[in-house]
Image 1: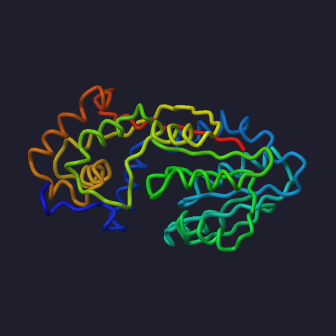
Image 2 (image 1 turned 45 degrees about the vertical axis):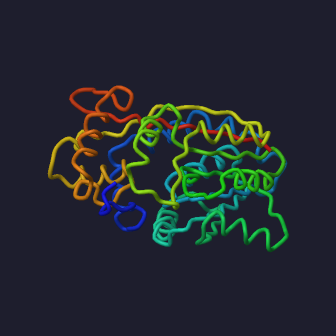
Image 3 (image 1 turned 120 degrees about the vertical axis):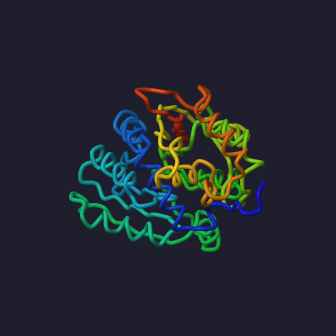
Length: 292
């Protein structure tokens, strides 16, 4: 590995920029929206039964776009019931965006929001020190388990916080996605970073099996348009390459042979499909629901 290659997570600004470009070129949020519309109402159908307040805990809530969709589904299921929505998010920048979104969103009169600028591990440590366990009706962890050091301990802890009829929703990349193949084949040649783990739904369900926790897993199709990656000299290509390889300025610092291999592989059927002149990377997502 060339010594000049460094992890994307060493430059937070660059990471945020590449992540936003990923979102604008993928069907990630549309895929989540589809799940929220079609599957979530059935999943949350009983979480608020006989309760005067519904408590939702968002772990890694980001800028809140998906969180507010979840809140609206809970409101539709339980009209007029008070909702306490607490958010654990390590990025102050994301929390600021989340607060802006709440301020301009209507119909949130019966929702109380609280934000905690910390990681899930810091939240866990703080709760254990308080020695008073707050129970929750719905906990969701959307695309955040990659950033947790001890995933089984995290899953076990948050499962212990579930109240009656409560559920946990985890969203991660699917074991059938192109990410799984990419990470397995190339991880040893890309910058190693202890801030991010290469995990897919296959790993998470194995951990849940080992913990003896019951769950259901749904896979939904999603794609990332990587067509720009095969044209030199455009900013979108640079940012998408960074996101795909988790490498800061990959195009400028990667050894030519590594780049050439990736250019070839990413157009192969095991990674992507070609449609109407576009190269669409397999970004399939898994939605894992754990009961109390």
